Amino acid sequence: MTVYVALLRAVNVGGRNAVAMADLRALLGELGFADARSLLQSGNLVFRGPARSGGGVERLLETAAARRLGLETDFLVRTAADWAALIRRNPLPGAAARDPGHFLVMPLKDTPRAAAVRALQRAITGRETVRAVGAQLYLVYPDGIGRSRLTTAVIERHLGTHGTGRNWNTVRKLDALARA
Picture 1 (cartoon, rainbow, N blue to C red):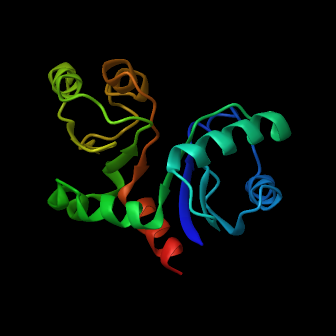
Picture 2: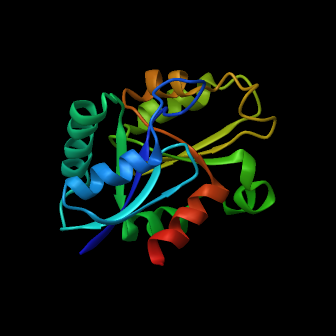
């Protein structure tokens, strides 16, 4: 059995896309996945299931969540091994150690082109830092995420793909949950 980490994009934020974590765990069970666990209320799941491509699991979960829960959102899925690798490949470990609450990892649906990442970096008007490694972005928000003009919409517009971010504390907690 493969262990998966799934992040839901934009759920339970500002009353939008409200979904109970218990309903998501039940949905995973109905789909044949096992040991479904959630972290926080923002759409973080860890579960076990047969080996499949991450994209195949994403499509299955997106379709089932829309049909059964009326929830239309992106799921970003990585295996536990992929999750551990995104932690190891962090290109900004000092920033993560100094201020894990303002350091984000954003798994993306697709690997962005290098030119698109450079365009995004040039578009930054504040003190934020962005690095891409494969289908993940690593972002530093030294002045806070809420005040930044480097929003998810700006990122997705420049990169031409969807993603969802989690701070380094949550990334590490999901790793621990996936290893448990």
